[in-house]
Length: 447
Image (cartoon, one colour):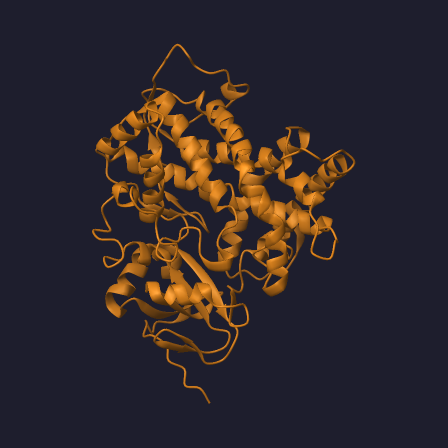
């Protein structure tokens, strides 16, 4: 019989550890690392006993193991995104589905989406107040939601307006359900999961109408994701089912919306507190450059990762992970924040210093805001491009006023960690006589 060897950890009851994780996760993880080292064992609701690691070598091993040894975290976001979502799929099914979803988010198609993102940024920013503090997170949410809706479904219409209205509260609700140990009993409107499923049926009906409208048309030359998925085929020549398309589109809408918007709000929060970097970015944007901007986005993701944990599930007994021997069914959580603040990986890790990424791309097993390995976020290239375009457009059109206010605290939104005050900004238009036309902007408020 294989001897299990787990790292040390706190001995307090599961509900105590769970409450601490829910209310002070980032601070608590740092305290546990200070006490136990770069690996420790916790006992929390949903996952039970779990090993948390932050050593780069052990992370690399975990992310590069085959699906016969290590699979996706269980349970995961598939609980809220559906059984056909990439989050829910494992093994060969995951490989086949991922293969169909790669083309829309790479290569020349990114250039097509870039124009959409700039248009949505200009449209939203037209409503920003001048010389008055406002939270940027709601604006960033609208920009990224509108951009991903247009990228996924193509032209605007009544269905997209309906999705634009229903998705934000539904996503926020679902992200909380995903991390809370609530039974999945469906009692309709009288139960949390019942209310969630009512909204899911509404979403499915909208997607059905969009598929009906799209499927009968000539799809050649269209760049929207729905058209591409309707044309895609598995290796055996079969198409994706409607249920699979609905689950995957929901995955793309959720994954391509909240996390990107939250990172952009963090970027505003960080830059206002680093005026020299902000000045250099504005000068670079005026000169048509982008290297510092890309490095800055990378550093924002290092210092303020929106997701602070990514997990895997052990499928075999006696699995050796670095120094540890883990039992079958064990959950392994990678501490993203712990890794990103490791002095041996990133010298002076508490400093916000984009120059560390100017001359070198980050190691993708040491800088992991998108996760890693074969389950790395499929939309990473799209998200990076989107953040670049939004920040470039804001720097081009606005002067962002620095501040001496304290850093904004971390605030958990369920899955994502956001700036507690929403990434507050004070801006002034660089050309006050050239306010862009933005249909519908007057009905929105940036505060």
